[in-house]
Structures are given as C-alpha cells and as structure tokens.
Amino acid sequence: MSGPLRVVISDDDAMIRDALREVLDEQPDIEVVAVGRDADEAITLAEHHRPAVAVLDVRMPGGGGARAAEEIVARCPGTAVLAFSAYSDRASMTAMETAGAVEYLTKGVPNREIVAAVRRLAGRGRG
Image (cartoon, rainbow, N blue to C red):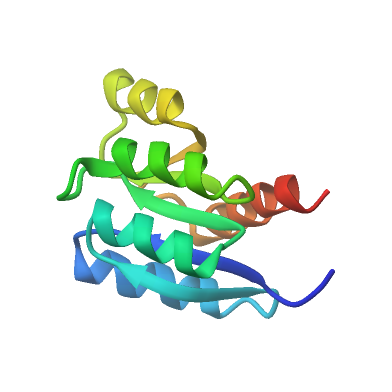
C-alpha cells in the first residue's frame, strides 16, 4: 500500500463536513485531502486530488450528489463514490446508485461503519 487512502468530502452542512473529516482523519491509513460544500466543488476537488473515495451528500447545491457522482465517476475512474445522506428513501438511493455511487450510508450510522465503508471502497480501486 502506498500512502494513506485519499478522501474528498462534500456536504452542504458544515457540522457534517467537520465531523466526517474528524472521524476519517483520526485513522492512520486515511487522509481527507479536500472538503467541499456543493456538487461543483466536489467535482473540481475530485479532479484535482484524484482521491480513492469521494464521500458525497445526496442533497446539496449544484445538482446534488447524483450529479457530482456521475461527473466524478466519468472524470476520475479510480475514485469510488460513497453516498452519505440523511435521507434513506428508495428514490434517493436509486438516483445515487444510477449515478455511480458504490455504497449508500445514512447519517447517524456508527463512525466505525463510515470508516469501514471508506476502506472497502478504496480497496476496489487499488486491486
């Protein structure tokens, strides 16, 4: 393994951004390389940093997580998308899956599940 797993986070809620960054940065094998507030920033940051994983809020400005996921998957083939949302309705989950998200977590899951999902998704691009 060469260096930490690089992660980009994008969420329009500052508290969620900060909490996610803190949880992930506590892990010795994970590095949050950038944090955005909307779909446009998520896409730009993913293109610039080429992370192993992009953690995207489903409902955020700029077209939402689905638009960001679709663009990131197209432009950054080595980046896996993890959807992270307060919403667990079928429509939101289907939209993210269709856009290319590999996994979908609902906000409020234990931190260990978030960390495990990032590691799982990062492993997909490294093998």
